[in-house]
Amino acid sequence: MKLGGILGYFAACLFLGLTEAQSGCSNVVVRRDIASLSPQEWGRVANVLQRMKQDGWFEYYANIHNREFSNIHGNDNFFPWHRRFLRDFEEVGQRYDKGFAVPYWDELRDSHNPASSVVLSSRFIGGNGFGSCVKDGVQGNWTMGFPNNHCLARSFDRGSQMQPWYGPEYIFSVMQRYNDMHNFREHIEYSLHGSVHLGMGGDMSTFWSTNDFAFWLHHANLDRLWDQWQSWGHGNTMDGRDRNGTALSLGSSLPHYGEPISTAMYVGSGRMCFQYAGGGTNKRILRAMSRVTQPLLSTAGEADAGLHALPEALRRKWFPLLESNVPAGSAPMNGTRSIQSVSRVSGKPLPYPGPLTDMWVAMHGFDRAIVSRIMAESRQFVDELNMAKYLSPY
Image (cartoon, rainbow, N blue to C red):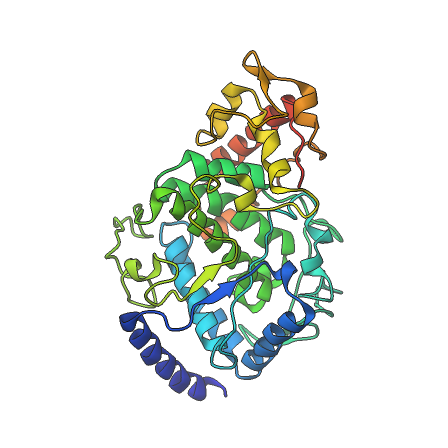
């Protein structure tokens, strides 16, 4: 099924999707961490992707993303538009397999050494390109059709390695410090969003980054973080401006789709018939870093203990929503903390994340001054936590 078939197929999907949006969700799928999928579960995902590729859907979505690029980046349409776009892709996948759900890549867990992630193994999406062409994994030896015929390309930004990405501690801090969409969006888009795209390189660093299934895994994770932030009392938070400077609200129209932003705001209702594994409403643990990302070799308590043991001034500055009480075993001492209490969590000092390049900033039309301010803030964050002898378990 190529262009003509896709248009008819899309019209049918749109009609069915609008009907479902009006009547509520009849099939809520669960988006899971890709690393948690069994070989059989991943095989079902891979089968859907192969069939979507054969029918031209990867070209279809690359064309949309390329055409709408300036409408959906560098402004506050970013989160709701990509949620709608992800759901669009997922709905098409469900025509091949009703249980299809886009997995997410917990990139925060892999942020210190991204190239070593199991996600980039032949078991899942494959690794770095050979002569830039991806040869293994689910998209191994694929020829992409947009914007022209070319091999699916990846080219890590440090040769065979990648610069560190923005880590869980910094993103957890951003989620606590900003209560408006505009600042929350800027601090995520200009940090984790860009560092992953740039680290992967190849198609991921172009206008047609959707060619790489890493794009969908990456944006599912960003959407998961937004969903988590929404659960902290920001469920209806929509502000900021579009690319033309027009104020955005829940009633504003999403580029390409022409639907109100409100239709993409609420996970598990309307047309957004999905949820994220590990979600919940237990208020006692909603704001634990272990709910944002979970290190593979540590318990949830260990993941959070180091932050609770930071000096009170640092907690207030960078983690204002952390409870003032500190778990047993990491009690502060006279407004500070003992080195031993923080170091009981095995780990390493925080690395500096890779910066956004001038090419990336220009490509998106970002304000360089804002990007520079956010990058400087992230480096200050790393310096202050390392000076406090915080050790990351990630």
